[in-house]
Image (tube, rainbow, N blue to C red; front, side, top):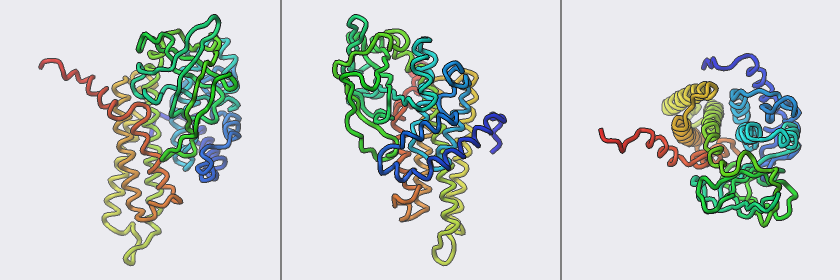
Length: 384
């Protein structure tokens, strides 16, 4: 496909990312899957290569580049090299709107330099055992006491949960309110009462550490409040379109990787005296899959361009996230089928892609919620 929204700088960054992932990550995926997390040193090496939080201002060690196309390139190469399982996307894609747009100069000076170098790993703690997509129902609290907040509560499904050094936590600073009572506070490693729970045993994405977090009377300086008190829900909703776009970018990366692996496999696997690729069913299946990959890529690239212009609406991002991740699961499943029994063996990458893909329809807002958002935008309750 011709993709005209990239320029020479993005091509150079793609070469950098591909070289890094092939050398530093792809050879270690199996070991990381077994360990349940990646080596911390890979974060520092990525930071040294300029692959983390490049949006940070130059004064704090970043490159000051606010261009989502770099996030798209990084994700495509991450999945295209079989290196899935790293939390770089959260650090460089999800976190910048919080760490750059909402922070004071004092906070930037404290938090950004280490985030760029990979010495500081971030998490975002929103979900709770009893609250997922319904953020207004969170129960974690941060009650003001002088120059500190006292934080109590439990968070779950936290990406980078075991490795993180700092985490932006969604809390209720006014428990009597729903959405208007939500604020964002940074809790840091070493604060008394901040504990990590169990390493969650997931179906897929096993090398990306996910954990529960517990907060028991954790005293957090008021200076760690992100943005304004009571506006946390609005901040999160404002950032969701980009997060959902990221899910679509990841979906296309996985789809292309699954197609590549399957084409290679059917060229070499023989059945009934000929290679699988010679069967009409194989050709028809892969032709249909290739078309789906191209349609998804065009859909995502269009959304990226709209996002760069500031025109990507929440409804459009929701529809994109729902369709691309549903299609991702369909594509990977059809590819696995062409592997036959070997596709069910964990030693084959296609099996990992199949396991890893399932959560895409759940996080960043379940696909049922995405359909509801799009459906509401149609104003179906209005009389004809």
